Length: 97
Image (cartoon, rainbow, N blue to C red; front, side, top):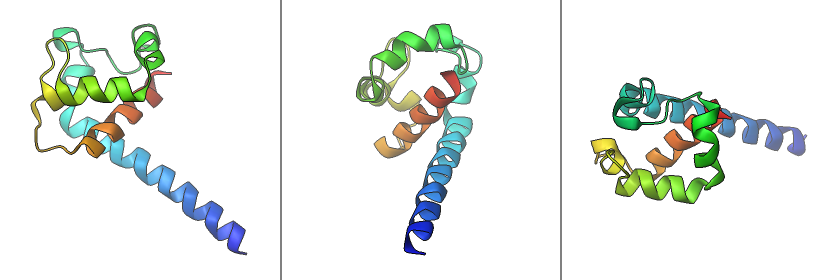
């Protein structure tokens, strides 16, 4: 019984994190990353995201939190925590594999 509960709990956590990442993306990142504004990689475009994904999560997080190219740090949403940014990145990567 304990194993079943643990599996259910872990599964629920993963779904919750995915949902949180999607909400953060939609509220803070979608404007640029859905339209490619200022060169932002469009979520879902595997060709564009492939090389970025290969750099690894830590590099993507560093670029997003410090700023990269024309994107300001945290996309200009300085109130976001690094954990929030990380969840949004995970969501975008998940949608772009």
